[in-house]
Length: 79
Image 1 (cartoon, rainbow, N blue to C red):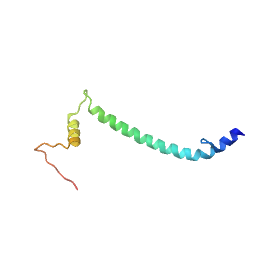
Image 2 (cartoon, rainbow, N blue to C red; image 1 turned 135 degrees about the vertical axis):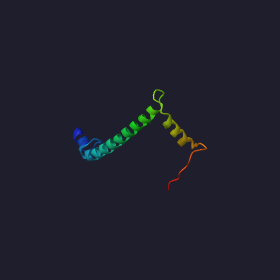
Image 3 (cartoon, rainbow, N blue to C red; image 1 turned 180 degrees about the vertical axis):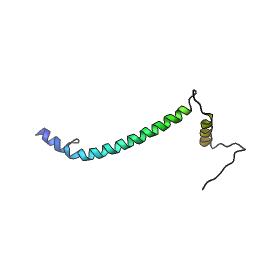
Image 4 (tube, helix red, strand yellow; image 1 turned 90 degrees about the vertical axis):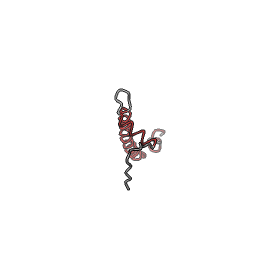
């Protein structure tokens, strides 16, 4: 009797399986998105390591974060 009751009305019951499947699909989609973001961050991080420092990338990031421009830079505003 105890097992029958929980098989039909518990959190992991037969009646809740469709909802659990949709949650699984949502979580898997989020996992794929986060894995891609992690890969992008690892790539950016590798560009800033001492062994493979990309000075152009470093210059680009500094200018973007600090809003820094040189006196002879040309600014093009796109609308």
